[in-house]
Length: 317
Image (cartoon, rainbow, N blue to C red):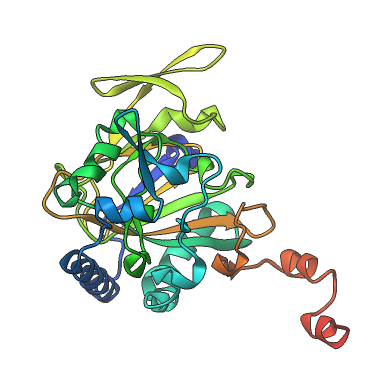
C-alpha cells in the first residue's frame, strides 16, 4: 500500500513512462503517421474560406467568423469522425496486436484489474499554426477565446481520418463522453517530441481530487499556477508540463485538468491515443464498434453471458 501512495498516477492523476514504445512498433507507426500527414499537407488539408462558406461550415456575423457546426440548429455537412473512417481501425489496426499494445494493456490492468476495455482509439495531430489559412487563425486564435480546438470540420473530408487540433483549452476528459461515468484512463503514446513550442502539454496534478467540473470552468493562470473557482471556494493548483518525447507514454485520469497549447513549431505533434474503461462501466461511447475487449475476469465473463456459456447463448438465439 505504501508503494501505491508514491505512484504518481494515484497521487497526481497522471504518470509518465520514458521510451515505452517497442522500437519496431514506433518506427512502423511513425512512418505511417508521417506519410499520412505529408500527403494531406501536400494536397492541401483545409477547405479554403470560400469553400467552407459555400458548404455551410462557417458564416460571418457582426464582422466575425462563426463556426456554424457549434450553433444550435446546424444543418450543414457532418463534422464527426465515424468509426469506418477512423484510421486507427483501418491502416493502424495492426497496432492492437503489437508488443506495445500488449505491454500497454498489461500496465493499465495493474491499475484497473482484469475487467478492461479499450473504448476509443485515435491518431491525434496538433497542426503547426503556420499551416493554418488566415480564416482558420481568425477562428481559433488566441486560444483563450476558444472553448473547443478541434479542426476536424474544416479539414477536407478525404483527410478526415485522424483527429486534428489547433490546441485544446483547459478541460477534463469528462467533456468527451458526457453520458459516461468517467471511470477511464487516457493513454498517449507520442510519435513526436512535445518539447519547446511543439504543442506543449500541461497538467494540474492536484485537480484529480475535484471530481467532475462543469465546462468551461472559471480560472486564471499566473506563472505556473492556476486559480480555479467554483461556487464554494477557490483552489490554487500547480501546473506541470509533460515533456514527452517520441516513444514515451503518458497516462492520466478523466478528472485531471489539462491543456494542449498551439503548435508554433515547424513540425506537428503526433500521438496515438487510447481510452481504457472497466468492462462493465458506462463508457459513454455511442458507437460500440469503437470498443475492443482487452480482458475479462471469470466473474465478468459469467455476468456478461447471464450465467450461461456463449455456446449456450448461440444455441438459444
